[in-house]
Length: 114
Length: 110
Image 1 (cartoon, chains in turn yellow, orange):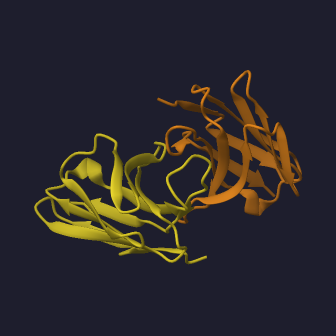
Image 2: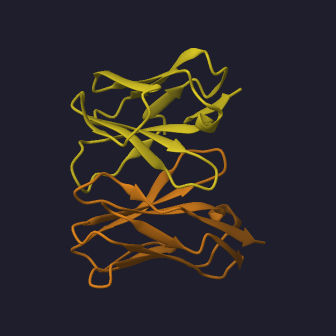
């Protein structure tokens, strides 16, 4: 299934770099999500967008900046990250943000901060 | 907000045996309970889900049960196979988007 595509798959960056993660969905969904998955932790919801509007920000540090130009694309802009930000970043989409909507995940971007 | 507890964190079974993973949730408004399977290095994939108006659902070797009164739900895998080895996440959703449990690493030993 390639309904949700994330690029790049792997990213290594220094703490002073600026990079962006990209997510694209071809499922006609209206809601998109960013999750962080660290070792030995559950998936942590970071941001939710519904019809291009941000509906949730789970107290994410400002060094992570999301952007949703349309319902099919979602970006996560990264700057001045810390070593503890190394993790797998997963994008997901669902029909809309409503309850009872299964989410479809991308393969994730494995981020390593040096 | 919603809090999901999942047990056990690791589970090893012999091929052909059954595996059971249990979860509890805290928000009585939660009404949707999907289960995701994540194989090593791959994306989480939905394997089965249940809604609060249903007590049990089965799909081949996988079944889920839901006890709304006790706020418990469980995943049952019968006749386990090596390809069932993965991390399984229980999830609760209602007024909030999906809240994931911490995951259960299932190992099926051939």
